[in-house]
Length: 369
Ligand code: AGP
Image 1 (cartoon, rainbow, N blue to C red):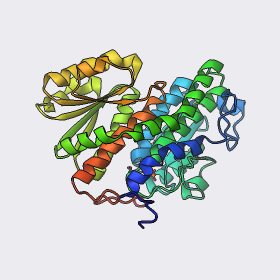
Image 2 (spheres, rainbow, N blue to C red):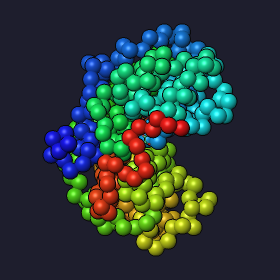
Image 3 (cartoon, protein in one colour):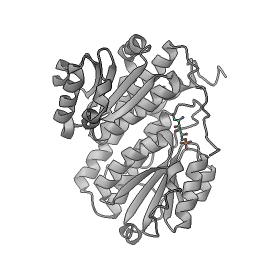
Image 4 (cartoon, protein in one colour):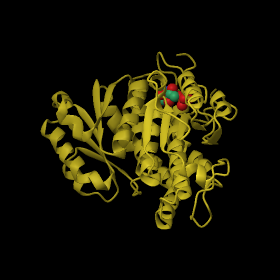
């Protein structure tokens, strides 16, 4: 096992560090050389078939569900098709409105999650076109779906999913550009902008991984708090959900993610002196609104750690610490912003002496209901 860990203490940290390479694999041979379009030769949709799609449902569990929330944003914005995201264990018990004009996308690292597989079967039974996004070739989900695209992240051993999430986000963004291309809902300029942004990601992830000392220090300092809140708006909210899940599952710290604007509808009552709040502020279009939410928690004496894009000098005035991510398009910022959150969770779990790779009560692949 030590050999498999390649010198790292845990599989999770090894997999965190593998992300630049994993993402490169996800993108390899799928980006046109001149950045003009996405190549997904696996997909056999015609323009007419895509034009007939009236709705997309994304169904998944856990981290894959969180990736689906980001995917919704990509798909709706670029292809202008309404998207619903459902937890797989809920989907099939609510008689979903799915028909032959629906595209059902199931997301699963392992391709073996029972609820996701059952949801896929249900979508098929109702006549939907089905697509699986998975990491495991030949898995049950890849065999059941009409079409499949692989994340090519390499084996993920740690129970806590890291590189599967970031590669799912990369693939989701490529899929959204691809579908938008088929439906003529994306300009050549926007497509090129996003594709060149995707190309920068591996180097940008590397940059974050080169300096993890401050993240380690925060984790050691706040690793013994019992509650942590994650806040953000828009795509930052989706990333906040993943950050909270990661912290809960491996460090057993109670963590909750909130859409920052929702705080004052109840949760603000829990924000008291010394409570750590991780505030994501990477989305320029909602930046000022997020700042005002940060001020709200700061006014209650929370300890605020801001996650912001490099060059954001303003945020420093309102938070206790800032972790910067390299500058990126708002669509791609989540792929960078999640990295400090994965690292925070990892170092908090190590600080607390938890069994990082095999957290209590959890299995890597949930093949029971
Ligand atoms: C993530 O850290 C989890 N351990 C878990 O939520 C996982 O993402 C979920 O069980 C789904 O697994 P899958 O992607 O293999 O379907």
